[in-house]
Amino acid sequence: MNVMEMRDAWGIDHIVPGSRPDPGPPGPREVLIRFEAASLNYRDLVMAEHGYGRMGSLPFIPLSDGAGRVVAVGPGVTRCALDDLVCPIFLQGWISGALRESYRGTTMGGDIDGTVRDLGLFPEAALVKAPKGWTALQAASLPCAAVTAWNAVMTNGTKPGDVVVTQGTGGVSLFALQFAKLAGATVIVTSSSDAKLDRATAMGADLGINYTAQPEWARMVRDRAGRGADLVIDVGGAATLDQAVRATRASGTVALIGVIGGGTAPLELGRVVTQAIRLVAATCGSREMFEDMVRAIDAHGIKPPIDDQVYAYAEVADALSALKRGAHFGKICLENRV
Ligand SMILES: NC(=O)c1ccc[n+]([C@@H]2O[C@H](COP(=O)([O-])OP(=O)(O)OC[C@H]3O[C@@H](n4cnc5c(N)ncnc54)[C@H](OP(=O)(O)O)[C@@H]3O)[C@@H](O)[C@H]2O)c1
Image (cartoon, rainbow, N blue to C red):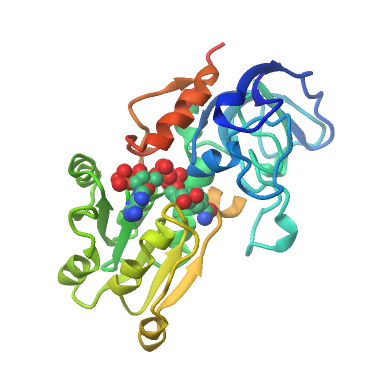
């Protein structure tokens, strides 16, 4: 099968076409899929630079997220059938319940090879059927960003009338915007770009704040939300945590999702303690959360926020460079054009 891989060295510039033996045939409760599409997450940039310590080894096929058609099933498979469009889950070991230490070592495009390849053999338990009527390109946007957003919005009990703040207009945040609207929340979006804020407003955001023009955006959140936000979904880390805490109401929640603006943050602990602010973290989500999310997508016709520029698998390095430049809106996706 064809793959795109880092063979001799890490780094975006070292991603080259390659060939590997076809996997399969599937054994008991295994499923062989032909990948048709993939999508990027910020994490894929870090992985390409071998930035997560010891995770991953060369040769390495990048990207955690993808979608493909079932082309063969092993004995005893009941969760999917030939020709179904399915997605491998991000943490292959996390089926339900809370995250456990034992699920480490099972991340797609990290501990194990990613999705920029023609074929993949998976346990049926680690696959989820795509939403009804979705294309492979659309389904490929889901496993990491959307499930993380679903986890952050739903596990924290978002309800009608709540005020939710999402940061930036990347994949996680635009899915979070849609899920929070679905839960009946008022949603405030921050971005460095007024044009992107206009697009977020067109998707349902109730207020957009330019965080470059308004570095103390927490004040604007409080002006709008009165008592403060019920939930702030923090992807900026060191760059945003102070404002996230200031924007949050007493007994409200800051969901720590990303560290795009740095991983070590000074924090005004007095405010956190006296306002009883909950700091919780989310690392993607389980298969069960993924399935709950797909049911909600089916029921409410949510559309994935896919960037206008779509790449071929062979252009994965260009796609990662585009993610690094940060001009995108939502998910950067790739097609396996064969
Ligand atoms: N915990 C998890 O399970 C999990 C899962 C997925 C992702 N993440 C993390 O979540 C973060 C976002 O991931 P992604 O894939 O959605 O990234 P992405 O698509 O590359 O989007 C990143 C966006 O972040 C915004 N941003 C950058 N600096 C910012 C700041 N100081 N304040 C507010 N927004 C800022 C930018 O929005 P504008 O261009 O609009 O300014 C940018 O488009 C990353 O740190 C990633 O590692 C975590």
